[in-house]
Amino acid sequence: MPQNVETTTLRDLLCASVNAELVGRRVSVCGWVAKRREHGEHLAFVDLRDYTGVVQCVVPGSLDVRSEYVVRVTGTVARRPDGTVNEKLATGHVELTECDVDVLSVAEPPPFQLDDRVDIDEQVRLRYRYLDLRREKMQSNLRLRAKVNSSLRRSMESQGFCEVETPLLWAPTPEGAREFVVPSRLRHGEFYVLPQSPQIAKQLLMVGGFDRYYQIARCMRDEDLRADRQFEFTQLDLEASFVTQADVLGFVTEAVLDAAEAATGVRPGPIETMTWKEALDRYGTDKPDLRIGLTLHDLSSAFATTDVKAFSAPTVKAIRVPGGATFSRARLDQLTDQAKSLGAKGLAWFRVTASGLDSPLDRFLNDDERTAVRGVDGAGEGDLVLIVADEYERACKVLGALRLAIAAPPVSEGPYRYLWVTEFPLFEGVDDDGNLVSAHHPFTMPHLDDLDLIENDPLRVRSQSYDLVLNGWELGSGSVRIHRADVQSRIFKALGISDDEAQSRFGFLLGAFRYGAPPHAGFAFGIDRLVAIFAGEENIREVIAYPKTQSGTDLMTGAPKAIGERQLRDLGLRLPPKG
Image 1: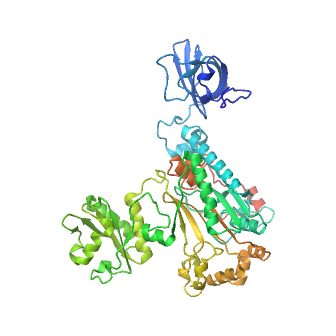
Image 2: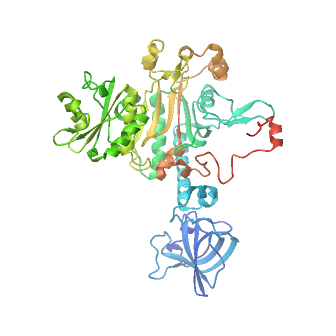
Image 3: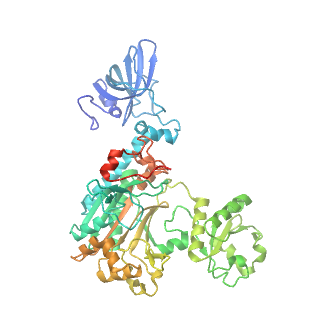
């Protein structure tokens, strides 16, 4: 008997398990009617579908079933007659003959076809998600997700990690994204929140001696939705004690490569690493898409003494667009408008020709400046050079955005280019009160070589934090945590957080640290995003069973909905009058 035979009370096989080895055997299969065709009054054909595939069933006489009826078919496995083989089906060389059909459930005509041959309005798909899930694409996506989850669990356990579930009802925290709030019925006026991540809980597990923790964690953030973001998301979350940044990168790399191999059948090579400064300098972003060849080049020294006002700025950055000299003036104006919308004062463009440069600005350049423009990444005839002059980060980020607008392929399109980005700034700027702002969170360990800069030049302090990027999507982030009281005190002081405020906001974590906190570090990455790329999808909704729309609604259930007065009273809540 084949290994993929499934025996239950109602069926002997899954549809795709019907094969030539079973010819002559009488078997039962169950599923949904995909198609029904009648040949006169004496013969009917039914294509029966379950999650594994389709098998053709030949039924003597007429048959009163329609598409999506749920049936049990018992028949004899036979080879298809010559000329009727269907090479498109895994079962296309065989069929079930002399079939008896038991109707297990009748079905109304579905509101859309379920065979993936037509495009379906997404609103309709989400309203009838239970039908959409029957489609081959959704079956494949969610089963791929299960395969990835399984591989991640095996990988983490093989590396000595222990799976621990952390609470879904948690204390409100002042850090990070906006939280979903849950009112307490037993303590009116007090609230839980749904966790944005298990961050503090997993650090407490390190204090508790668990050494290596992981969890496939459900997290919630009340943020605007987009292609790579939902209210609810799932991440591989991990934390480990007595480790360095390099150790964590090693753990996560192993898990991600295991997942990639399980999903694609091919194990990627080693993951590249670059610093945040290198990523910004070369690609204009902290999550560069390495599939795009365009890189940023610095022309600041060439324009240091320029007389051209457009280039009088601390930083002058440029990119070469191969073949971009064919861009129309309308396309160049569109790129200029985009640059301005991102904060740049403008965008300079130069078409490279056989005789020189074609640009409204060319006549203002001296020979050395022309040579510098033509030298950007070996620019040649037919290429386009784009230049932004501004403050360093703005010049880089504007050109980084234009680079994507010009050349970015779909995120799910191969090849898969993974990248570790390290050494992010510890602080991202200063708030209105003159206090520094954490780029990650206030428990991120500074780079040890930069400790002396915390008080004197804090914006130059690098952190021991790191992101994992795939094809321009940030999969996740993590950091080495502060476990030393003296370093934590200096960071709080730099952030303008007093001892009383620190106790109020982070008291139970700081209290735990007084009882012996080991050096520890962690990471979390989004499983939804990883699976979407593996599945060839551009939106994570396609790999989530019951997603929300862009406006945050669930079209299938109608959520969010109002609740009744009795429930409001039980929770001690009162809504303001409408209008």
